[in-house]
Length: 86
Image (cartoon, rainbow, N blue to C red; front, side):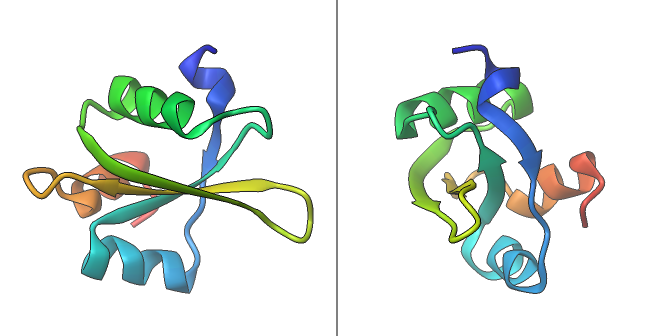
């Protein structure tokens, strides 16, 4: 799957901004057909970081949300600033 098809857009809510600061996590809305490994590869390719862990859930509105935890040597805040969401 193409990385641009996997990640639809970053999500920045109040709880997501707390995750960026406290847990080194980024939150994205992703393609419903994307798997954890698809999301991991797409984030690593698009944002030039290393991913430690990916959790997925489907929201009640039918969208798939990905919680992406970065390795300690990368800062989620730096990626969020590059994306313009922080």
